[in-house]
Image (tube, rainbow, N blue to C red; front, side):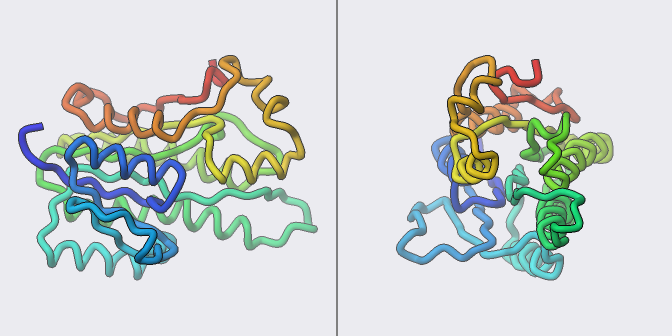
Length: 243
């Protein structure tokens, strides 16, 4: 890499977001790590190329204020990774209240839209990359995950539309669709289903969970010079579930 580039990563506090942050730092990027819940100072990793920003991406005023401050600092982005997301069991049963639906749609759909729309003012006139973290549930449904399935289908549609919109600016837009990733979010889902990991992974051809670092490696490739001709695509990182 001939010059130091800056990437902004949402949902950077843990899991896939933390792995993304760490990996891009090893690649000599400057990283702006966006988190909804402020990290205590003692938990913030100290690195000269790492900046933490507290912002709930589901709240448009917070997103606008965050981007305004970065513009004042004359930050130029090369990349944006829309990783922040929430999940949870949710159906159309009248016994379910609507709060889970509203929170999941607000973060996964509205938040991805707000960050992409307003962060574009930070990109150079030509060149850059956006990577959206979707899910295998971008391709099929789960009966008790109505909101999450809807949100991740939306992420994939948004990726394809945005790829065509930004092609004249040479900004590529792609999605990564992970299956079971070794994170706390996956552990929560496993407990919701009341199944052991052996039972869940029996349906995965490779019989293993994806490591968060593997998502980071793929995101880095999609932002590399080797991938400048790839846009509007969805990459399944799921151990063969969608094969």
